[in-house]
Image 1 (cartoon, chains in turn brown, red):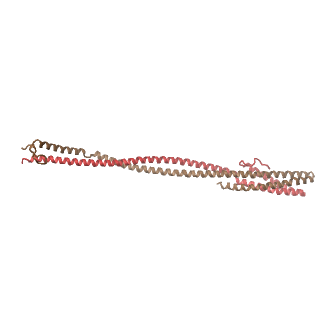
Image 2 (tube, rainbow over the protein chains, first blue to last red):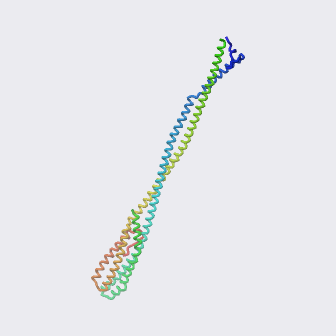
Image 3 (cartoon, each protein chain N blue to C red):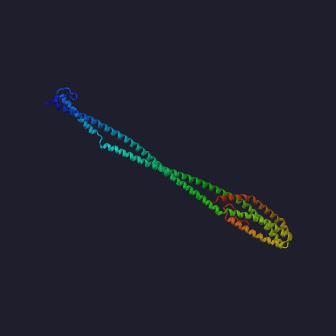
Amino acid sequence: MVAVADAPDDLTGAAAPPGRTSRGLVVAAAAGLACLGLAVLLWPGADLHARIEQTRQQARADRELLGTLQAQRDEALAAARASQQAARAAREEADSLDARRAGLAETQEAVRRAEAEVLGRLQAVVAATDAVVTAQNEAVARSNQGDQAAEEQILRSRAIPAVEQLRAAVAAVQPTLQPLRADTAELGGQLP
Amino acid sequence: MRPSRPRATSALVVVVLLVGVVALAVSTGQRLAAQITLAGAQQQAAVARQQVDEATGAASQAAAERESAALDAERAEQERTRAQSVLTELQEQVAAGDPAARLAAVEELVTLGAAQADRFAQMNEAALAGQTARFNGLVERSNAAIERTNELWRTLISSATGLGPSAPVA
């Protein structure tokens, strides 16, 4: 029977001293077994693959969520833009309506002023009319009393001049009519 | 035959060692590859998460902007409604005053005044000429004209918008 100590040293095949050879083989065998064990330990296990897969799934889920969020953002921005446009349009219309109201109020005031001017002149017409009627009534009264001379005197001195004053008062109204006509027409044009 | 068993043992040891080394190399390579893959996946996941976080912020900001814009649009609509209401109220007020009818009344008053002047002149002539019947006929027409004048004044005063005369004078 050959002793282990007589075996050649490792791979060299050279003769080795007894004891050293056997230790070399043991160390080599242990190293080989250690390498195998370490290889087993280092082999990527299911948990590592699971982590990889889980991480990939998380990334996929995040990418899908990203699309959803971007769609929500786009939708919200589009709605915001639509609301902003609607607000702009409403304010423009409000400004336009305010301008129309201001214009209408201004024209209404112009009509009031023009009408007041005309009516003021017409009051002078009425006053002149009263003066004529009064003078004529007095003349008629004198005539009824048989005083023809007094009647004629009243007619010539008061009634006839009063008629001229009435004509002048009527003529004075004419210049004020045109502004009233124009403003009234403009006011009518501003009504719906 | 003596060396065969030691050689076999040595060969076995060599095989074990080689297998161990190779297995260790392969295992190490596999682990490295897996860890590199994991690192890549984690990096991609981190990028995706960051994008999600940014997109979440952007979506929240856009939602806030949408809400703000909606409120502003509501306020603008209220402004428009108010402006329309004020304008409509004024239009109704003006229309109720019937400015065209008032102008027509004023025009008729002027016409009546001019006609009265002519009529009064004729009445003076008739009175001076002693034409009593003609005078009386003119008086009737004059009284009718004065009545119409008073009616027009009453209409104008009753529908006056505040700037006309305060009372009829005829």
